[in-house]
Image (cartoon, rainbow, N blue to C red; front, side, top):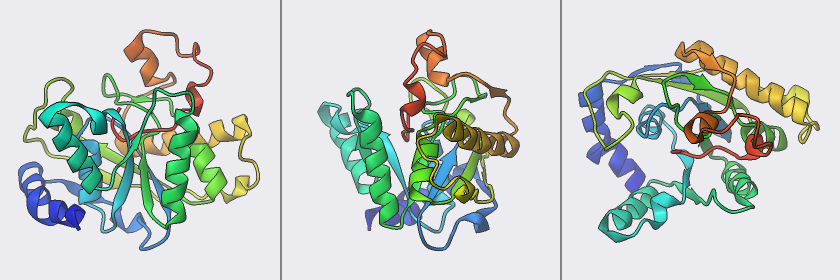
Length: 241
């Protein structure tokens, strides 16, 4: 209930008026049934714009820090993310990848739309980075379609650093659903999972116009070589990295 109150009364009208989002391809969102919405990740604001332009509710997996931060700010964050249907994922534990996949599977089993960011974290420089294969594993195991979602301009709305919200026009493009049924029964094959992930990232590149970089974004942020964490491709994607 509160989700729709935020969307149509408290937050949605302000964003619509202030940022004048343009929507393309909204008809590609299925009217019912489960689907994975795979988006590029430029800003904290990304997860607000896609749900605003979707007739159906989109559920994201959010990092646990948004739910357990101490103090008044932390209490507000927990309330806000919980009431808008976000699901906390602890990315520090050894089982974090599997926990995230299990949470996403549960939502898909309920017939919901699940939003994921294949890059796993926000782009450090506006380019599109190599996708992690958690999304592919989920798509292959559940058999649900993947819909690429391009959000353009959000890095100008809310740039990295202290929270700011600028008057910048945003475009949201929903690509055509990708059916990976041709790979049925091949979940767990790392070459197939990489091929599926790369196909999604190619569609996102076409939709966004971003330059593609074939390294993981987290490796640039942490200053480590992109191939120094072999399990990185197994870590599923979260709402706001």
